[in-house]
Amino acid sequence: MEQKPDIISNMRAITISREYGSGGGEIARRLAQRLGWQLVDHEIVVRVAGELGVSEEEVEAHDEYSEGVAARILSSLQAMQPAMFAISPVPPMTTAEGYQEALSRVVEGALATGHVVIVGRGGQVLLCQYRDVLHVRIVAPLEPRIVYVMRREGIDRNEAHDRIQVKDQNRLRYLQNVHRQRPDNAHLYDLTLNTGIFSLDQVVDLIVLALQEKASRLTIPDEELGPGAGLSRYAGQPGDFHPPESVVKPSER
Image (cartoon, rainbow, N blue to C red; front, side, top):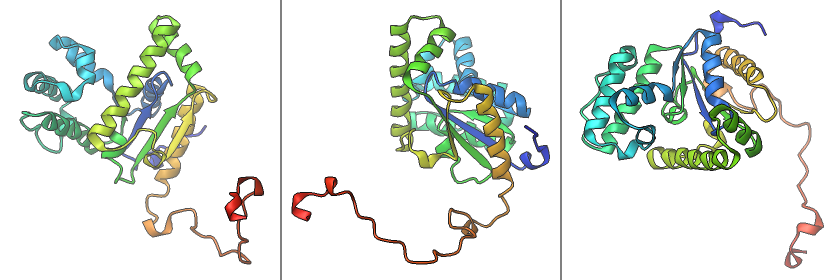
């Protein structure tokens, strides 16, 4: 597929939401490599946490951070990725809400830097108002996800199944608690792709194509977008929809 760098450069970010084991993290890595963009993913936080002696479980339990741990992680992130804090300094964190605000600033700072692929972190909600951001959701049926986790993590089937359930539940709870949204809300995304059907490289191709197409429509006014844009009215009146008799209640017949 031919890429159009001049058009793509008008977009500032791609957010990737994913079901655990769908390959979303690997897709984000390949996508960032293809575009030459900065990858902002979970591994950044995990790597810093490891250096600080904090477990991955603590990293994922954002609302359970103590003030000291949160401050150390965000300070280390600032040192590693200073451009991602281009908007304003990270505020003092004395509460879970303060920590979430700091994480939001990481995402906003990444957007200000531009040309970033943001994995998770509620990016699809935090950046929903920006037209120059493409929002993508990666999903797959449970069975292929189990196989993926078994192969990538070297664990047995039962462990993989349990890990998927825990990870998906944690992500659901995080988005609900912090942003009052569900990750499976289709209206949060421009594109949802199923890796149970498409290969990871095919998904990358489709995302790049969608990125180009969204970039090409940035100059179109909001009121001229939507499924009705450019369409004339029906030639006649659409007929009433009558449900099959089998689904009509006896009282309504």
